[in-house]
Length: 202
Image (cartoon, rainbow, N blue to C red):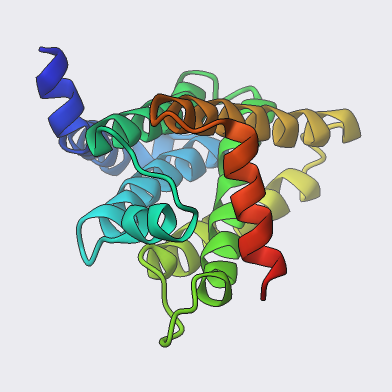
């Protein structure tokens, strides 16, 4: 069972996404706006993972080669990513009356968009594209912008809630990164140092 989950975590996540899509299509008119947004975002993030890892794929390879870090088991890294997506994207489906949790997931759209654009320069790409960039800019970013505008216009979040949402997402991402990096035998501080060098050398 463990090997199955590690090897096919993206397919399992995709099956969950398909369930969300069916639920969304059937219940669209009865759903609250934020609930629609997080459902659309979850579907979008799964498309994003497919673009990064499968079609055309190669984002993980690009990172590991540039940052000089090798995963002992590439499936483990994708498993951790899947768990992260479940935590920040799918958990809010059950707490759609808690904008704090919804924006924590939605903010990932901004991070992904910025990261993929920046990666063009950082990773010396000859073409203005990195695997995952199309879905980040065309799918995730518009959903994130729309959700943010909706939250602001309806005053659904206090100032502290915005900060907590971002902090929650960042902490989840850092923990996920640490798990993957440390499992490869590299110190997390060394990994961060390699990122800094890659950025500053541009």
